[in-house]
Length: 161
Image (cartoon, rainbow, N blue to C red; front, side, top):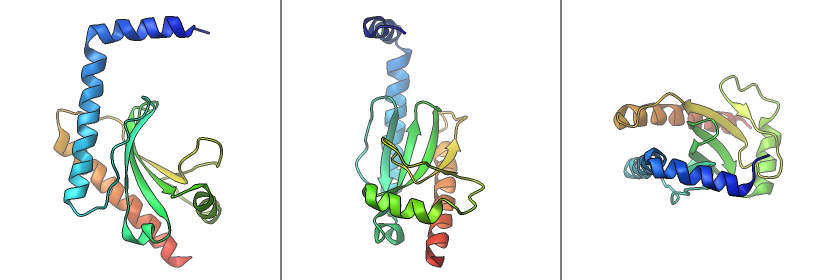
């Protein structure tokens, strides 16, 4: 196992090359713009959480979900290096309650999370993994389409339970 000192030294060398900071700034800038896009189009949104290079996200609060103490997390996942959308609860109790409703349903396009320490999602959807930040309008359109479909599916399901 690598020591923290060696890991920090590797990080320093990568930062000195310049591509890591440029790419990180570009991702954060895109996420801030994406948040603004959703806000301008009438969505209630949270502030942007930059994370610890695990994920960067903001939450959306569609009215039908907010009244159930649910939210949508739109995120960039650094591990899978792609954009995802998650259904999440306001707190662990709400999350567990809705996970119980959702876990045994058939969700062919989504992953049902397993509750556990550090798990913040109930249901997850991969949106875009092959992307070009130099084509932000195309990327935003793909994310918006996938997010809308995800929200519609959840709202339709919840309307029946």
